[in-house]
Length: 163
Image (tube, rainbow, N blue to C red; front, top):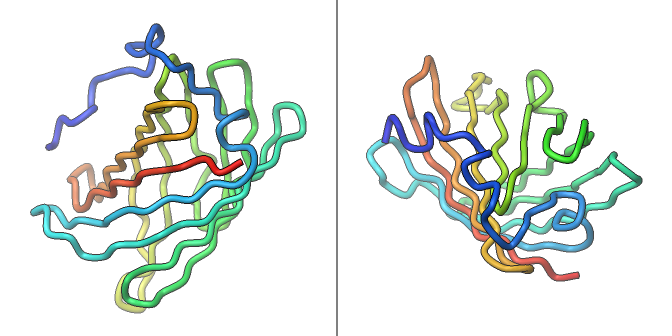
Protein backbone atom coordinates (compact mmCIF):
# COMPACT_ATOMS: atom_id res chain seq x y z
CA UNK A 1 0.00 0.00 0.00
CA UNK A 2 2.86 2.37 0.75
CA UNK A 3 3.89 2.49 -2.90
CA UNK A 4 0.36 2.48 -4.36
CA UNK A 5 0.53 5.03 -7.19
CA UNK A 6 3.63 6.43 -5.44
CA UNK A 7 5.97 6.63 -8.40
CA UNK A 8 3.44 6.69 -11.21
CA UNK A 9 3.10 9.97 -13.06
CA UNK A 10 -0.13 11.15 -14.69
CA UNK A 11 1.64 11.18 -18.08
CA UNK A 12 1.61 7.37 -17.87
CA UNK A 13 -2.08 7.55 -18.82
CA UNK A 14 -1.70 10.12 -21.62
CA UNK A 15 -3.02 7.80 -24.35
CA UNK A 16 -5.84 6.26 -22.29
CA UNK A 17 -9.46 6.95 -23.23
CA UNK A 18 -11.89 8.43 -22.58
CA UNK A 19 -10.04 11.73 -22.24
CA UNK A 20 -10.63 13.34 -18.85
CA UNK A 21 -10.82 17.13 -18.83
CA UNK A 22 -11.93 18.49 -15.46
CA UNK A 23 -13.37 21.59 -17.16
CA UNK A 24 -15.92 19.35 -18.86
CA UNK A 25 -16.50 16.61 -16.28
CA UNK A 26 -16.70 18.89 -13.24
CA UNK A 27 -19.24 21.14 -14.94
CA UNK A 28 -22.88 20.70 -13.95
CA UNK A 29 -24.44 18.37 -11.41
CA UNK A 30 -22.70 15.28 -10.05
CA UNK A 31 -23.26 12.77 -7.29
CA UNK A 32 -20.89 10.38 -5.61
CA UNK A 33 -20.68 7.75 -2.89
CA UNK A 34 -17.74 6.30 -1.06
CA UNK A 35 -16.03 4.78 1.94
CA UNK A 36 -13.30 5.87 4.32
CA UNK A 37 -10.98 3.08 5.50
CA UNK A 38 -8.34 3.12 8.22
CA UNK A 39 -4.76 2.00 7.60
CA UNK A 40 -5.75 -1.65 8.16
CA UNK A 41 -8.54 -1.50 5.59
CA UNK A 42 -11.43 -1.38 8.07
CA UNK A 43 -14.31 0.78 6.84
CA UNK A 44 -14.75 3.68 9.26
CA UNK A 45 -17.52 5.58 7.48
CA UNK A 46 -19.50 5.63 4.28
CA UNK A 47 -20.81 8.79 2.66
CA UNK A 48 -22.66 10.37 -0.23
CA UNK A 49 -21.76 13.59 -2.01
CA UNK A 50 -23.74 16.02 -4.14
CA UNK A 51 -21.72 18.43 -6.28
CA UNK A 52 -22.24 21.28 -8.67
CA UNK A 53 -19.47 22.63 -10.84
CA UNK A 54 -19.28 25.69 -13.04
CA UNK A 55 -16.56 27.18 -15.23
CA UNK A 56 -15.71 30.56 -16.70
CA UNK A 57 -12.87 29.84 -19.12
CA UNK A 58 -10.05 28.25 -17.12
CA UNK A 59 -11.50 29.11 -13.70
CA UNK A 60 -13.88 26.70 -12.04
CA UNK A 61 -15.86 26.34 -8.85
CA UNK A 62 -16.92 22.97 -7.46
CA UNK A 63 -19.36 22.98 -4.53
CA UNK A 64 -19.44 19.70 -2.60
CA UNK A 65 -21.79 18.55 0.17
CA UNK A 66 -20.85 15.36 2.04
CA UNK A 67 -23.30 13.40 4.20
CA UNK A 68 -21.55 10.75 6.32
CA UNK A 69 -23.03 7.57 7.78
CA UNK A 70 -22.59 8.98 11.31
CA UNK A 71 -24.83 11.96 10.42
CA UNK A 72 -22.01 14.47 9.98
CA UNK A 73 -22.52 16.93 7.12
CA UNK A 74 -19.56 18.70 5.55
CA UNK A 75 -19.28 21.21 2.72
CA UNK A 76 -16.29 22.24 0.65
CA UNK A 77 -16.00 24.73 -2.20
CA UNK A 78 -13.05 24.23 -4.53
CA UNK A 79 -11.76 27.09 -6.65
CA UNK A 80 -9.85 25.60 -9.56
CA UNK A 81 -7.52 27.39 -11.97
CA UNK A 82 -6.23 25.66 -15.11
CA UNK A 83 -2.65 26.77 -15.78
CA UNK A 84 -2.51 25.04 -19.17
CA UNK A 85 -4.23 22.01 -20.75
CA UNK A 86 -2.60 19.62 -18.25
CA UNK A 87 -1.86 21.46 -15.01
CA UNK A 88 -4.05 23.18 -12.45
CA UNK A 89 -4.16 24.53 -8.92
CA UNK A 90 -7.09 24.37 -6.52
CA UNK A 91 -7.97 25.94 -3.18
CA UNK A 92 -10.67 25.38 -0.58
CA UNK A 93 -11.32 26.61 2.95
CA UNK A 94 -9.83 23.53 4.63
CA UNK A 95 -6.95 23.08 2.16
CA UNK A 96 -3.78 24.37 3.83
CA UNK A 97 -2.02 25.59 0.66
CA UNK A 98 -3.02 25.42 -3.01
CA UNK A 99 -3.41 21.89 -4.35
CA UNK A 100 -1.37 20.97 -7.41
CA UNK A 101 -2.91 18.77 -10.05
CA UNK A 102 -2.39 17.47 -13.53
CA UNK A 103 -4.53 15.65 -16.08
CA UNK A 104 -3.43 13.31 -18.85
CA UNK A 105 -5.54 10.86 -20.83
CA UNK A 106 -8.19 9.39 -18.54
CA UNK A 107 -6.40 10.30 -15.29
CA UNK A 108 -6.06 13.21 -12.89
CA UNK A 109 -3.62 13.35 -9.98
CA UNK A 110 -3.93 15.99 -7.27
CA UNK A 111 -1.75 16.52 -4.18
CA UNK A 112 -2.72 18.74 -1.26
CA UNK A 113 -2.72 19.14 2.51
CA UNK A 114 -6.12 19.04 4.18
CA UNK A 115 -6.93 20.27 7.72
CA UNK A 116 -9.10 17.50 9.25
CA UNK A 117 -10.73 17.70 12.69
CA UNK A 118 -10.08 14.61 14.83
CA UNK A 119 -11.35 14.42 18.44
CA UNK A 120 -11.73 18.21 18.81
CA UNK A 121 -8.28 18.94 17.35
CA UNK A 122 -7.36 19.82 13.77
CA UNK A 123 -4.53 17.93 12.06
CA UNK A 124 -2.96 18.47 8.66
CA UNK A 125 -2.88 15.40 6.43
CA UNK A 126 -1.22 15.00 3.03
CA UNK A 127 -3.75 13.80 0.45
CA UNK A 128 -2.94 12.15 -2.86
CA UNK A 129 -5.97 11.89 -5.14
CA UNK A 130 -6.05 9.74 -8.26
CA UNK A 131 -9.16 10.07 -10.42
CA UNK A 132 -9.80 7.79 -13.39
CA UNK A 133 -12.53 8.38 -15.95
CA UNK A 134 -14.34 5.14 -16.76
CA UNK A 135 -16.78 6.53 -19.33
CA UNK A 136 -18.29 9.93 -20.12
CA UNK A 137 -20.44 9.86 -16.95
CA UNK A 138 -18.48 7.63 -14.53
CA UNK A 139 -15.34 8.29 -12.53
CA UNK A 140 -13.40 6.43 -9.82
CA UNK A 141 -11.39 8.33 -7.19
CA UNK A 142 -8.86 6.69 -4.89
CA UNK A 143 -7.26 8.89 -2.23
CA UNK A 144 -4.51 8.08 0.21
CA UNK A 145 -4.28 10.07 3.42
CA UNK A 146 -0.80 10.33 4.94
CA UNK A 147 0.65 11.73 8.14
CA UNK A 148 4.44 12.11 8.33
CA UNK A 149 4.67 10.16 5.05
CA UNK A 150 2.83 7.14 6.50
CA UNK A 151 -0.54 6.05 5.04
CA UNK A 152 -3.20 6.36 7.74
CA UNK A 153 -6.39 6.05 5.67
CA UNK A 154 -7.82 5.52 2.21
CA UNK A 155 -10.91 6.91 0.51
CA UNK A 156 -12.64 5.27 -2.46
CA UNK A 157 -15.32 7.23 -4.32
CA UNK A 158 -17.51 6.52 -7.35
CA UNK A 159 -18.74 9.59 -9.26
CA UNK A 160 -21.68 9.92 -11.65
CA UNK A 161 -22.22 12.96 -13.86
CA UNK A 162 -25.90 13.91 -13.89
CA UNK A 163 -25.86 16.87 -16.28
